[in-house]
Image (cartoon, rainbow, N blue to C red; front, side, top):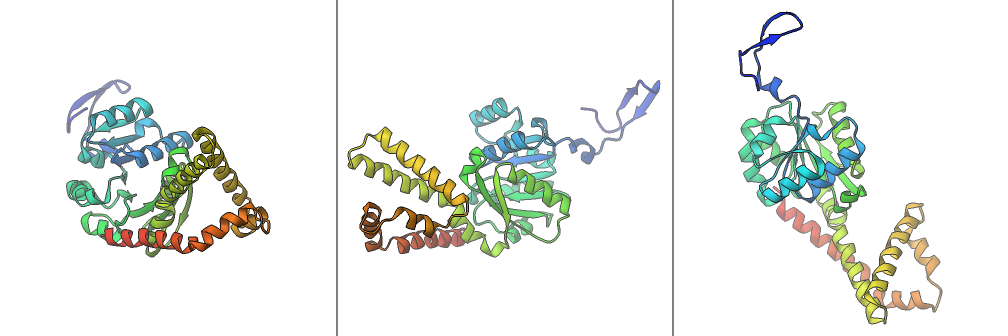
Length: 294
């Protein structure tokens, strides 16, 4: 790397050129930095490299403390990796904070001197508000995002909130990054705790229901392999039907014959106040998101 004021040959001109290399000139080659290299970071990296021709592996840097994880990301996606959060922050124009909420304060304190008003900060941490990040960093350009785990296969649901200080081009770039891993909508930040509970935690709740269905199938006499295949395909097919615009209520009515097997099962769910149980589940998750909020 040339140093400030270094004399280097300018062969095309046949004379020497003095380069005054500033920090900003040195860092323009990295577009996107991830602080944290866990599952959500990987999901976005995978989607970006699959769906965005404007970003190449060399445009991405990931800071990650675990040696084996850095090796995996570097070997699998050919991105640059580093154990240093400061290096990732200094080299990146867009910084995605993909760390656990409980680690956010320490990370922000570590990188705050490297952030300027031109950098865009994207947080995917549950419960961390835009105002909190703005209070820690020297930029108002903060985008808060709640993605979910199906982003790992490009089927995620992301919701983002932002201040009014962005240019349309900056927002479009971040939106394109998120869309590479699934669907994206924008909502005011006041809804983010509810979003966290429903779509953020939702895959965990649905997976738990699938576990219960498989276990019930085994109790009904099926093998684990058959029970798993029937349950997962039924879930996938039902989801595809709902994607056509068919309402959940109408689909339920189509399956349910008076006095039939589906009605017998629904009677049990209704006797246990199933809808109230689901509502309590979502509201408990929302409450916890509020408790985690900074």
